Length: 133
Image (tube, rainbow, N blue to C red; front, side):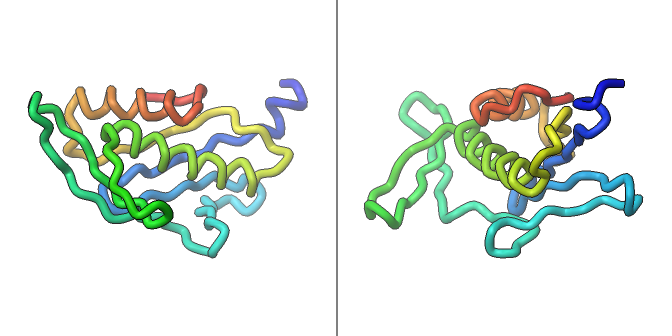
């Protein structure tokens, strides 16, 4: 085992329908550590959105952006990708010098195969390469 592997860390991202969180297992304390964002929250929630059906019957998510006071449409994978990227960045910041070697993403139990594949696409959109399915 090289030094990189010895000090690398696996993280778990709980990608929920309402709340999401990120954690790692502390081998010294022998317990999982749920990471907090910059304001001290362990669970993040999405900002207000509306699920819409387009004319071609595809689904999109319309979000209101308070900065420019406009609504924007996103694919569900894009929203999940934004959440995953945010959680991954929290883990990177908190773990500092410990590289992240693996990422395990949980999804709601009721997700079907297509939704699970969409979650893998969301991971790619977030720039997360080392994801286990």
